[in-house]
Image (tube, rainbow, N blue to C red; front, side, top):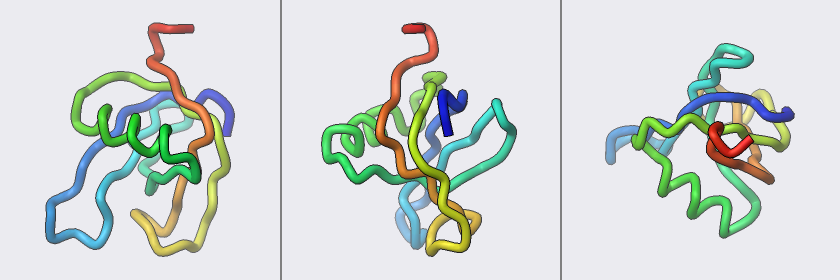
Length: 82
């Protein structure tokens, strides 16, 4: 995925997953993670903030995450920073 636009949303504490990404371009909801600790921290920071983000990385299907999908984010930036 390259420059997908959307927001990060948290899930309840008793949920098996912690957050998900609601994409506007293209539309959909996806599990969310990062192999990079710094980006994982940024994702937590933006969770439930309403900040529109652009994300880059890899989309995996059929995985144990929200909607059986997971965005492996390798880069992100606030949408206004383009």
